[in-house]
Length: 218
Image (cartoon, rainbow, N blue to C red):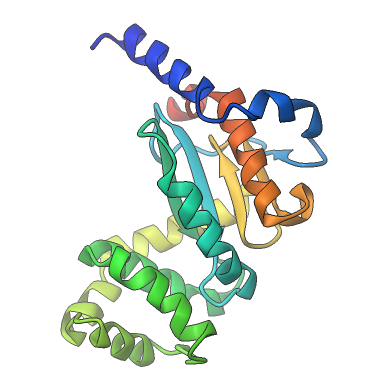
C-alpha cells in the first residue's frame, strides 16, 4: 500500500469513528475542555491516531474510570493506538510503574492489569513493597524469580524513566488524564466527567488525525 493511500484510508476511518463528534464540536473549547501540550510529545506509535492514558494503580479515580475506559478502548478501530502509561508524580509511584512494565515485559499485562487495581481498591491490599507485588504476581501464575529478574531489568528501568519524562513534560496535573496525538491533554475536571473526557478524546482524534509527524521526526 502506498503512503498516500495509507493516509487517505486513515483519515477516512477517523472521520467515521463517531458520528456525534461533529455535532459536539462547538461544545469543546481549547483551554477549557482540553489544553495543548507544548511542545508536543514524541509519539510512541507514529502514523496512528495515538491516545495515551496516564494513570496510577493507587488512584481511586483511575479505578472507577477503568471500566469505562476498557469499553471505549475495545470499540476503537485499528488506526487508533491506545497506550497506557503509568504516571509518576512522586517516588512512591515508581513501584507500581515498575510492576506495570514488568507485566508488559513478561507478556502478562492483560492478566495482571485489572486484578492489580482490584487487589488495591477492592481487596484493600497495600502492595507497597516489591515483595508484596511479587507475591501478588505469583498468585496469578508468575514465578517470583521471573518477576524479580524482570522488575530490576534494564528494559523495565528504561520504560519507567520514559514514563517519568512523559509525566513531567505532558503538563498533566493529576490522573486519570488522556493525551491525544501528543498534542492535547484532557481530564475529568476539564471535560466535566469521565464520560465527557472520552467524548473530548473522540473529538480530538477526529480533528487531529495521526500523531504529529513533526514530533516523530525529532
